[in-house]
Image (cartoon, rainbow, N blue to C red):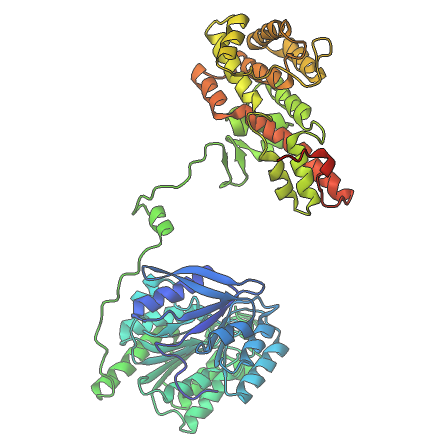
Length: 608
């Protein structure tokens, strides 16, 4: 066991198993104490590497993250404290790994439930190599104004109230981490505060004992008196009794062993800690308090009298000139986290993104205010989900069914169209699913798929302005623009597209009005008089019928309809639908294990 001071204002630690809050609390304590360097040198997060952003005062800093203990110790050779926030399942192995590193001097184990056999091995290794283990089941320790472990001493407000931002004259050691906070406050009220405080942990076999730390404190000149808080169970306090009897401690010790109430119970009682269970008279709180008193420690008659005993001892040392009380200093203000300040109503912060279609902050995600459970329980389909996320309202069933029909009819159009061709070539190049899908989607535009949007725009404009089919087509011709939604490579007036017929039949049966579709049919009649292949194609059918869906449902204003058409909702429908087919082509090529595609020479016209 080390014989002197464990920490200083330059001590740096490695933090095992990333926990944002305790690390940030350490850094806030650093800033409060006026440290120039952060006390956390690196973070060890098994399987991860990179950096974690945290705050050091107002400055945002990046702390390196390492995947192994060895790598972290190599990268930060001056960090000699290992703070282990691993679970009880892995705490022993990671702690032993740290103890075996030549740069690590102190290991603090936070986890409860570490197997006692593992703890004994850690203790034996640490003692034989002159290293210190604090814990297991500890909140850690603190050197006032210099360094603190994890969540020790709690919030910044508590740290300020307990005057832990500057060193005092009292060395404190306890089994209990929770009671440490209570005693830090008590000591700050009746003395000039603590110099160092340690919670050794409540397990049966602590890595370091009460007497270990009292003997250390005895060798630290700044520590003028010690306060010890033990508890019933075990015999750790008797090692302190022996040290006092042998004269190894020459500074006043004020001690109390909690658990005197145990005698009020008829049977043996297990208190909170694993080690807080009296195994006989010698392990009782009364016996240990008496032994400490007989050995020369200042032991009050009850816990309630503990504060007065600490105060009296401190004041005697002041009177004797052995303590010059520390002058008070005003600590700097720790900047408040934005989220905390917002919640407390202290600041208003603008948001960066607006979302009106979904919300995942509650117990379950909602689409346009409809809980996910309702969507499933009420048997909503894909069309219903699209109506919620795209249009922010529940459309009538015939509308959502029409959307689903459009998706099914447009899901694929064979391997030869540009989108499918690109996807196939990309998949055969060995690219992943997303890359293959995106390569196909990137071809969607005015000449492939985008005609749905244009068909809707031009049909709507012509109908709303009252143009006859003749006027509409001839005006488009004068502008050099082909009528979107009209024309097909294969289909003719006497060989109509089956998809168009299915859509028209559904709309005439279910839609309240099909005025835009009928207008498109009239345009088709005129264009067929010019050429037999100028039929209404599936793009034109979907575009015109979607206008009828929007206008006939009575759920959209004229302004909303204009906006929907302008934004490109219909193109979105084609993108969604065709993604199904493009994904299918990707899987098809990979399933067939097709090689890299190379276009045949004979299919290229080479010219000069």
